[in-house]
Length: 432
Ligand code: GLU
Image (cartoon, rainbow, N blue to C red):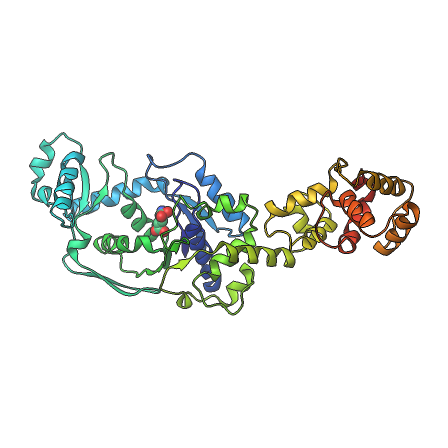
């Protein structure tokens, strides 16, 4: 079983979407289930409605989960497991206050040393624990030996006990920390492979240690994906608009193109333009580059145009808020003029809008409009052209400029003869 485990704490980042896509693809390849687990145990950081937003984005990208779980529903199991670890003396109650710990952290920082927990509360006896009425956290004792795993992308990894440290598994409010809940849920859900972002590499030995201490011996394989960099070579953060999936969609990038781009990024693929179903046939995690990849919006723009070209015209029309296939065809004529829905949509809407007569072509436009209103539609652009030229006596620039304005509201654009076949059934609606 594979899983995508987002936290409902902000807009979905393209790095998260990439993780979701890869988990989905590999689940399909292995014919295993793909589940979504909303990691909602950090109540202070949760944002109302973000879970639904994440699920809607997954639907939009056709990443349909076999099941959706909320981590908070497993709270009783998390608590029972913490009690088990306490009983077995693998974990201990820690009464250090946040202020005390912060002071220790600051001291380590000034001494230019990595912070490590002092180990103070490990020594408390049961009687001392019971006599203390103050709130406490639960810490798991650090391992005795290095924790090692073979990452499918990063290769052999080894972490020393001190780097894992005796870390908190239950907060003072008796909710599990991310590492504890995540390690347990991967066990409960029988996860076989975890694909996630590189920022989690240092959490992995902690999660393995938790499961080892609980006697879970089934191995979970890990693949940590390199981070995505912005054009300045820094990790793409909230400050980069393009890091938000919602922003990209609002900018008018198609889900198909975004998914294509995220699969292509830092990868060796047999072709450049493809859909999710095609990627399932050849995708190979081992071919992903170990190095971070740079986000290139121009490449995404190129792919967006390619996907609009490929798209069924009716579907494309719907993506633009219309219904007829001919509008989809019309959009395809405008791919030289723009590469996103946001850029092309105003041009399509201008075709159906009231036309601008307050310009040097006013007189000619009126002549053409009157001529058009006198007749019915013509099959080809040439027929229309001959009729209008004869009827109005206009020719050359005096004919084409005003006709273009009358049909599209714009002075420049695609060849009218290319647009006409897709416009002709709306001619009466357009000429106003
Ligand atoms: N909830 C974590 C996050 O959103 C992901 C954890 C994981 O994949 O293990 O970063």
